[in-house]
Amino acid sequence: MSAALPKIRIRGLCKSFGEKRVLDGIDLDVEAGTSTVVIGGSGSGKSVLLRCILGLIQPDAGTIEIDGVDVLRQPRREQERQREKIGMLFQNAALFDSLLVWENVAFGLLARSGRGGPRIRRSDARERAGEVLAQVGLDPSVGDLAPSELSGGMQKRVGLARAIAARPEILFFDEPTTGLDPIMGAVIDGLIVECVRGLGSTAIAITHDMPSARRIGDRAAMLYRGQLVWQGPAASLLDSGNAMVDQFTHGRREGPIGMELRR
Amino acid sequence: MNALTRPARLVEAIGRGVLDTVRAAGRLALFALAGLSHLLRPPFYWRNFVSAFGEFAFFSLPVVALTAVFSGMVIALQSFTGFSRFNAQSAVADIVVLSVVRELGPVLAGLMVAGRVGAAMAAEIGTMRVTDQIDALGTLSTNPMKYLVTPRLLAGALALPLLVVVADILGVLGGFVVSVVKLGFAPEAYVMNTLAFVQPMDVIVGLAKAAVFGFLIALMGCYNGYNSKGGAEGVGGSTTASVVAASILILCFDYVLTEMFFSR
Ligand SMILES: Nc1ncnc2c1ncn2[C@@H]1O[C@H](COP(=O)(O)OP(=O)(O)O)[C@@H](O)[C@H]1O
Ligand SMILES: [Mg+2]
Image (cartoon, rainbow over all chains, first blue to last red; front, top):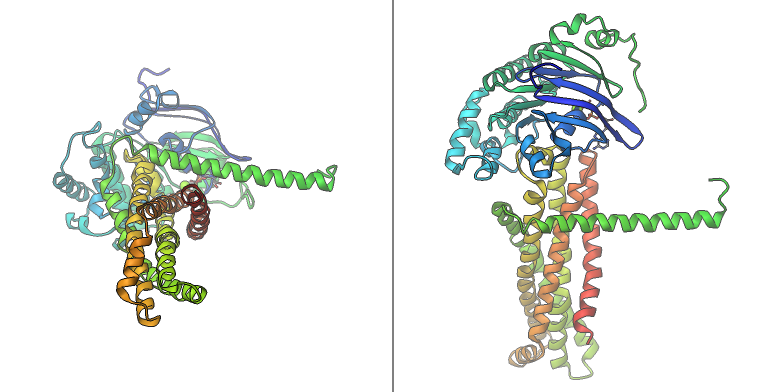
């Protein structure tokens, strides 16, 4: 065992939906202050992995430790306390469309106000939202718009702002660049790296965009058939020496990974 | 499977149907209890309550008002045809006020609101489900049941009685107008008869029914929305299901409550 405790340690994580084994014994360590990207085909269970850690899906077996605390075996309160350390950027931003942009960004701050977090008045929350919006390159006046008035790239930025507003120790990103043009994708990646470094957070990012993976990640892991079939430095994604990773990162049709045409 | 005889298979199919129904009812009951239990534990999301209340009370007012007026009018006409041989003047006033206050007010308002507000709730919460907004609440230190469901359940139970008060008044007014203008009744006598017949208990039970119906409408909207899956199409399905289920439940509970309170 290494001296430093990993920020997140996952062992033997399993999750099935009916007959379908989506996660089949995942082992993963994420060291504090590092970023890990998880790559893998569509429907391979990447989002399910993040949802299990977030407590949105109850896994069938395995352990998830955050700062050495086995969250699945804690009372509900303690589970929630551990998970409050995590900020999440959802795949399609998942902004609350009944609220204004600034209310989205300040949502976590207001929700925690007086309940585990510092008390904050709405006017202060509003101001803080403006600062965070500026951090992700948006004008604070965007705060008064409705999420539906924003483009996809702007929605991603707001989603990022919402995720980092409470300065979480851990950040999750689910396909942050999917659906964006390559330039906007690079901009979002840049913001993510900036935010993660700025907060000193530990990050897990999901992507199947190779340039994005190499920009965001220190480490990388590939999910295939419910298992992490390869882990290594993100820089070596394109020359990993693993046949499956090679096929995936180079987008080859021929290789060990067969296209599954039916589940 | 092939070894099973036809009757055995039939029994199996029926058994499974019954089990599924019981299971669905159990899930719904647990959902309702979970929603209600958050009333006892702070925080309470007042903003969400106020906006849900507004949606119930304000936006359904015109449609409920129209329904009530015309129902009162048509009952006056119908009961006049039926009772013209007897003491029509007092019978019509009696029937109009009792049927509106006891039955038509709560039931028609309930059905209208189910089609309007219940459906909108299912669509809104369903959209939040399929676009991960409900999961996002969970990652922002907010319990989605407490935030979305509890305020709506309370709003339904409190707003529908308010609507029914309006429906009662307008329904009786509709009957009055038809009786006086078309049937030639004396206005003072009609009013006297109406007031003589209606008991406070009739009004109170009618409003209690409304509270139950409002709760059921919100419950079905929230439950179906919350459990939506499968994108926009799934949300459409939940919306329809919420209206159908709420309408059926309203009619069932109407019978049960009537049996409990009026069949002395
Ligand atoms: N709540 C759920 N119920 C049933 N099946 C699910 C659920 N969530 C995910 N799945 C299934 O798990 C598999 C992996 O999904 P997901 O993690 O979203 O894939 P991806 O790697 O593209 O993010 C998919 O086949 C999906 O259908
Ligand atoms: Mg996914």
